[in-house]
Image (cartoon, rainbow, N blue to C red):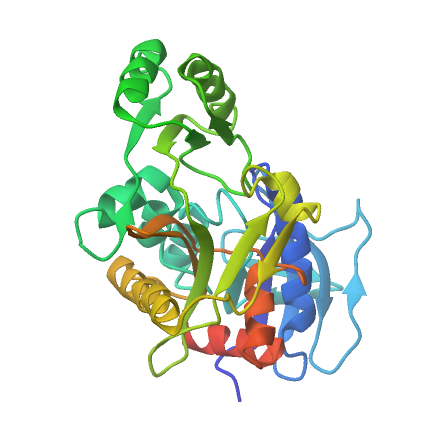
Length: 339
């Protein structure tokens, strides 16, 4: 018997990743154990939260057409459908980008005392910001971090920061928003004269931009989670892209291969796995978190932490779960019951 009855799967977001979030959320909702929980699908975007569909235990899924979707009452995190008021007692958050990945949604749920599937509000806020997360772990001695420079919109002289970054960093560099994912707003820059244009493009996704020195090596990703007894990791994936780097096109249009388990040595696999566990523990993570790295001849470099990784049928974490020989429904139950 599970600890919870009514699971609200929250997807959609206020970011450019909202459509990917919907696909992830629909997949998660379809795989949560329908014999154990009532599952409610909530589409949340720009402050409007609506019930898309629900499926009670051992029953058929009921959907609501656009224009007649019940609104979620945010005063107590409930919804009324067909005359019945349901107060959700658990939230499975599948919002890529703000507010679900940035800590705002977690803060709301914490105020109401409702448990959820991800890291807490403060950890989510730190991990969501690439520069903040790197700064948090840079001097731990756990993993290497590539040299970088920060540009903040409105409070930095862009031309001056770009000139200093060009003098300090080796090209190519990656220019990326400090928040967000799916490679929105990211540019690989090979020449100093192209740097400012890339920074201005990245500002379309957020108010702060990271200029990060490129690191040449093998791109690896590892996911960790807590199973009730300890921190576990899933099989590693190596990402091999046909493009210059693992951009949106490579991620979602089939221009990359994702080798799972990664074809690396046992010692290299152990290094990545143990580093992931250490970072998960140090940051204070909860739920399933995916860490991205570059493995080089000089050592392992940290790229970013994904506290709400993609969860479509083709996403990296479900692929890791399948490779581990785990059932995705059982895996989601583990996350729900131990976060």
